[in-house]
Structures are given as structure tokens and as C-alpha cells.
Image (cartoon, rainbow, N blue to C red; front, side, top):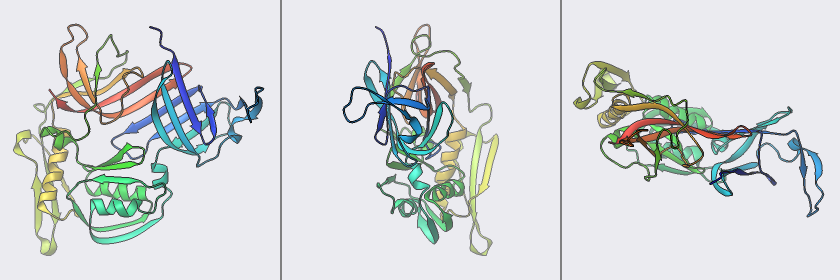
Length: 339
């Protein structure tokens, strides 16, 4: 069967197929999803039902802030890969259009807050409450922060949450207008299905191309214990220490003074410990547009020769390339979620 690359891109009211080059980046480590589109500086467009196209300057057909929708695939079978807004564009040939997902709206906010005591969920609610179109927050964390001060944008609020939690609390978009926030690795390490299970199968020589950078890493080399503490009133120091199952050869110790309780410190410590202690592959694989793959999917790996199952891993980051040179994805893997 022949596979022909296909695309459908809409910027404002400007619709077209095909680009010089397109790169889309998505990750569970950031709210910022990006798409960089390279187009001819001039284009022929059909207007008002006329059959004869008119030559126009491409950068006059849309504006900064216009909505962007990108669909890619093979043989007219398309899937949505990106939805967001035009952030900027240059005057070069080819024309480069910088696009950003719904974090673009987060960056347009103006937030000044000072909270003595507030939950992470409520803090995110304050950050997005005046945004239009609305952004839904999905957060079931039981973590309260103290002495939170932000003078900036909603992106600064999210950066503060990450900073206060030593990067343990993840915030990213699970859909174009749904902002997810919570723990990931510690929950998977306990057998919980954190995200809806969508499994994609990968096998060298079948749907994996060259330049894979997978490496095996294990706990036994440098098992690390995580200790988070907080200094209370009158100099009292409380702490949460990760579970003993990870060993104690190494130590990761931090003071998190915005966290209020020992139970929260323990939850954060176990999240960090699950991140730095696990057996399995890490790195990236390179595949085609199919199977359709996005962050939070489960990537099932198989050996090239006998097809033996090697385990399933959380997809943490996807970079999608599309253009005159072909199409492929770079898929970065995280924690092993199934043996």
C-alpha cells in the first residue's frame, strides 16, 4: 500500500495544504506547546468562488493572535496535531510562523496575588479564571502552599508551583484547553493508571527508524533517597522521607518552605524518588506519523528479531516533523509503567 503525506492547516480564515517545514513540540514538563510553520512568502489563493487564483503576500493573510489548527496524516486520513494561536511571524522567504498552544492565553493575563495559604488547585483556578476562551483545570492534588506571591502572568503562577515543589508537580495541557496538574511517576509506580490508557506499539525494523537513543538505566547503580523538609515557627523542622524500597546509596535533600504539611512533603518525596529511581529504558525513539503518538500515551517496546515484549513506557515528549523532507516523530520515553 502506498502512503502519501497529507495535511490540512488553518490560520485564521487562511486554509492550505502542504508546507516547506513544520515542527510541533509537546511535553508533560511544560504548558507551552509550539508549532513552527515555514511557508512560501507568496501564495496563490482562490477568493469569492473564483477559479483563477490570485497572487498574494502570505503574511497578509493572517495576523498575530489568529487561531491555528494543524491536522496531519496519510492518504486523507488526518488527525489533529496542534491547536493554538499565531505568536509571531517574520518577513523572510520562506515565511516562518511561530505558533503557541493555549499557553499563549496564559501569557496574556495580568496577575498580582499574595496568598498566605492556598491549595494548588485553587491557585490554578485563580490563574485561569478570567481567560477567554475558558481553560479547564484538572487537579486532584491535596497540597497546600503558604506565602505565595506572584506579580506577572498565569505562566508565572505555574512556574511558581513547579519551583515550590522542586519540579515534582507537573502542569501541562492534556487537551488544547484542559490544564492538568498533579503527580505522575509515584502513582504509576504504585500501579495506578494516571491517564486514559492509549497504547502504541513500537518495534525496530517495523515502525522505528534509525537514530534511536534508548539506554537502559537501573536503580541498583545509584539508588537515591529523597528528603524534603520545612522550617516551621520557632525553628521546628519537619520532613518527609521517600519510602525505603528505593535504597539509600544517594541522597536528594531540599527545603521546601512553601509546603505546609509532613504528608505533603512525603508525597513530594515519593514523587521525586519515583522519578530518579526506576529500572528500564530511557531516551528517545524515532518513528513515523503512524502510529499517532502524543504525551501521556503508553509506548510498548518489542525486540526487533523475536518480537519479545520489553515493557511499556510513559511518553513524556513528542516532537513531530513534517515537510518536503518527509514526516517523522521523535518520542521521548519516561517511567516504565508496565513490565
